[in-house]
Length: 149
Image 1 (spheres, rainbow, N blue to C red):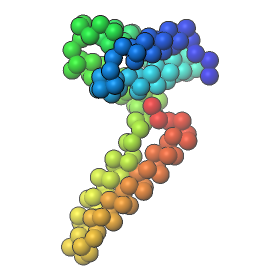
Image 2: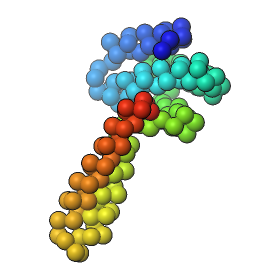
Image 3: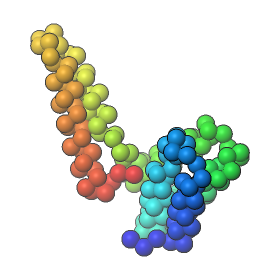
Image 4: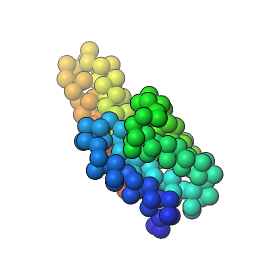
């Protein structure tokens, strides 16, 4: 996959940010995910001609400016902008966040286990196990298809 100049410049800026901030902040601001989002936005704007992805590139620049200076945007606004970009990738391009199906599977497994717990006392554990296996298999399937952000 060929990257544009924008993608290469932004990726370099992200690497520079990673050199400056500590690991706790990098996790808090999901910098590694931001790197993957940049690649996805660039891919969809180049191959699919997605105008929304093209306009969201400006939001990426705002997020990076915040990470580099940490004074123009508060954490809440950062998270909202980040979520806006993720929602676009999920709704318009069919991507999923890593662990989406695992958490859904665990939730449904817990509900199923609780519903069956009056019949069998270990039902909650088996429901959770079923949810874990089912959810992780769906997540692996999405990874193989290249649909994880």
